[in-house]
Image (cartoon, rainbow, N blue to C red):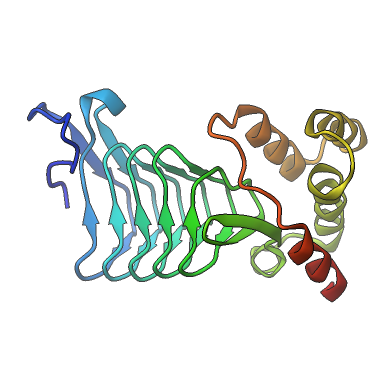
Length: 208
């Protein structure tokens, strides 16, 4: 922990790795400090589980209560929000964002942002639905889940443009905290969103 970053631009400048409270970091995990070009800081929040052989590269920002399964790997400048779960052997491209309560399937390669509450799988990873199991485990009510399902279908599986869908969702759910978080993520995505797997989404909705 706190080794120099694996970045050829690093010239020995003074940078930091800050680790919060109550984290479990297992054997052979590596967490590297930041670079001047990335703000000089790699940060790990509280209550996270980093299993064996996980890697957190320079200038990453991780929130709280995240699970990184065995050999999950973060390139530089990645943001992972609270309660996200990264499956074993998955790899996240630099500058990507993983939203709160998102689930990344094992052995996936993520090249673009994954919104909050969503599941993404594959190489390159595609969004396949909402992380309903995880959301139920974290106390989301049936009403909140129904609202998220409606918002998800409008945003990602309707014939509307994303801009049109966001306007409809905002009008329909003006005060729903989870949906406002989702919309804010979409509005601020710089790398672009992981594509939607329409076939898998249809199958997923059928199961629900």
